[in-house]
Length: 324
Image (cartoon, one colour):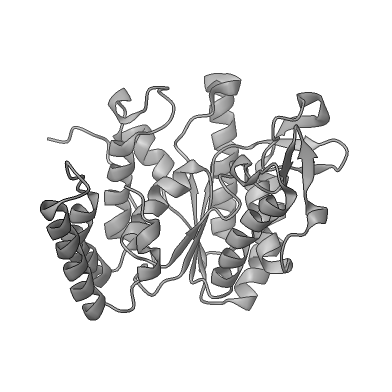
């Protein structure tokens, strides 16, 4: 007896393995799934511009990665004592211009280098609502607490999204014929415009994703994370306290649906072998000093060394960045 209406995940003509360099951009849901790839040591870069909700700002970031050498002081603005970039989320802001620029370029240059050799691009759109800065006429990633009167807010149409993306994706595919683009729509509901407004926004994104899939059938694909949450996880126990954002249990469930569909079987075996090491890393001892703690560190280092010797090609440089 089935207790859920299971969403059919299509057969994809590609799968990610531990040699697949992947750039992930978009909403906070991008980072939630991307952290699984990061902790299992896939070469991945997540949100070099910070969390990005609307498709035009995601596109603007990708264009910058292909066209800019780096960000300069001329790319920054200042408000309320903070230096920031309209291309970036607020976590890149800083009271000192030099430090803001350093943080932006540190992540930007890392992502730019990775994007040049990326075999997969994963994009997650969160909302079709955008803010256009009146004085520059640019759609911004984030308003940085600038008064609302300085922006025009409007909802994109599906055609506007596809017409913006098609030339860029065509150029990207011509330059990197082996790249695969996976589009997803975030299941996190944007409640500012109410239930109906949220559905209209998501509908725009779903129609745009389908249009891009039709325009680039050999390179552009869709993963139904939105549908999985809406249809398979119809219960508020899969949401956080705000009842809008999915919780860790929902993210784990999506990962378990993502893994067999898009992770190569050999890499799934490696994931299984990494689990004991990750469990030891997650362990929180009573004390961070003493013989017991020293033994734990020794066990972690020994197991890590064994796995490093067995799998030297994994993204071990990400080890210290893993968040639990």
